[in-house]
Length: 228
Picture 1 (cartoon, rainbow, N blue to C red):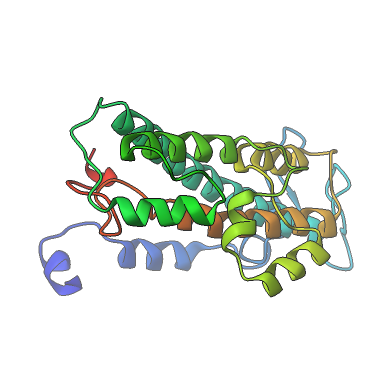
Picture 2: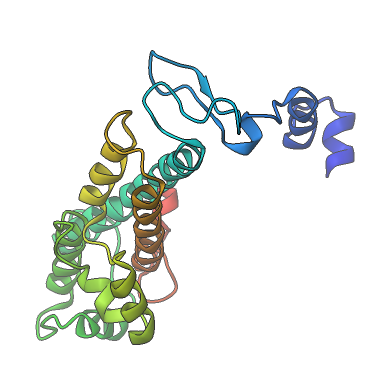
């Protein structure tokens, strides 16, 4: 593939990476020891010489803060996807889309695992699942995710609880995470690391939720949500 696109003169990721690698700042940028988040920067950490940025953050905090911001962007995208899945489920249950439930038994199984009532018509169940997903997305960080509690292995749940990274709703977890990235708010790498871990756990949960969508072979028919 590379030879073909190279022959056609098409810009590609491999050539762009090589070009950037040749000029990349390896002393600071590649190590996560630079920051351009505020108007007091850019700042760089020089171990043994300049140990803190203008805001007071050190090299460990600077590196994990950028990781947390990247994590938050990914979580935001997964949350957007899950929200659109939920809205599509609700609209489908209300008869406002061309989609239909292909395997009601599997839909009921999923809802039953969440402890939700399954003794309703299929369209009502689709709407209920969509509403549940929206509730989960907006759950307060002090309320553990019900989806996570229902589907995560019990031993893993105990580990997450012990570490203090069991998440609530992704919308509010994102607010907390990004807020802590603002300069002069949180420069402690341990605190920032824990929030990055919480975001990673949330990614896992949203990935599982997103499998329940129109077009997925589990229980929905017609085209996939990616094609809406």
